[in-house]
Image (cartoon, rainbow, N blue to C red; front, side):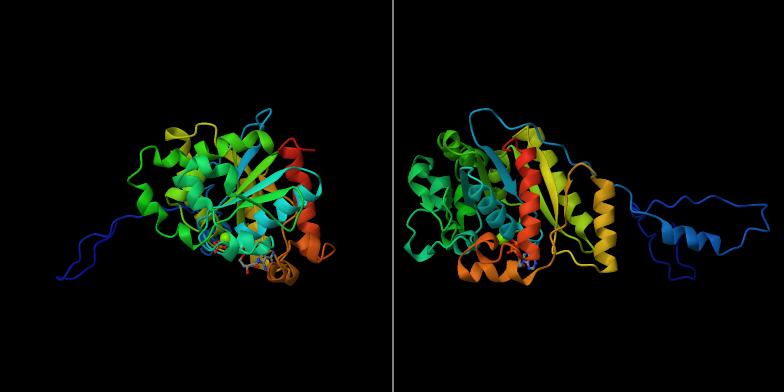
Length: 317
Ligand SMILES: Nc1ncnc2c1ncn2[C@@H]1O[C@H](COP(=O)(O)OP(=O)(O)OP(=O)(O)O)[C@@H](O)[C@H]1O
Ligand SMILES: [Mg+2]
């Protein structure tokens, strides 16, 4: 810590905990050492591994595995992942239920469901768990059902604050449905609020889509903290099923971030990285997943390969 010189001195600056691992070695009697070496070292310094993500446990026998797709960062590909993994697994014959807990309600649109005609939503599921069975709707894909999220979820967190057992509502509501499905995929809003906590408490595993851009690892650190808290207080079995690299391109930055993710979480990162592909972005406007829109596109192929890896991890293969 250094104080400013002169009479008008400012209070000392608080030292910030540094996340850059730089090995400063004092060089006292080494006149030959070029002075620029220190700069070199800093430029090659790597961010310290920022967190531990706990691995998940195998799927429970006789009932669906419940998996939340989450990242508090917006627009990283959560919904696109839910729609396309769910659809791909359903096309392979698995019984799949999507639960959309985001008020944007994009899962319904992307799966060809007309939200304006839906009467029961994820809001009912949480506030009145006994409605769970009747909250489900068919989609454009066989074997794939959905509990729709929509604007009615706005304000739900405030209402839930008054309820007992507010973190476990979704878990209790889903319980009777689980024997009838192989996999339940929950889409979450870009926040770590009470609805997302409900999804994590109800889940066996988490899928984390991460855009291979700067700040990706910082976002993960925040999520890792939430997972730790949920594990210690509410769901000791919660673990990560996979980290997905999304909207990936061949830029240097994308490659570097992908490299760091692979190095930090070698067993959790699911390959391949999902390429940035306009066909993925346009499929929802047709109300179908990529595999009914353009299965041979880059996005279609990437999600097929990802689904195969996850199918194995989830014991569905
Ligand atoms: N691999 C991809 N290539 C191109 N566009 C993509 C890709 N994945 C997603 N998108 C598009 O990026 C936008 C954000 O994706 P998406 O809605 O899936 O993210 P999200 O994490 O669910 O966002 P939010 O946090 O708002 O819920 C959408 O318009 C989607 O169509
Ligand atoms: Mg979304």
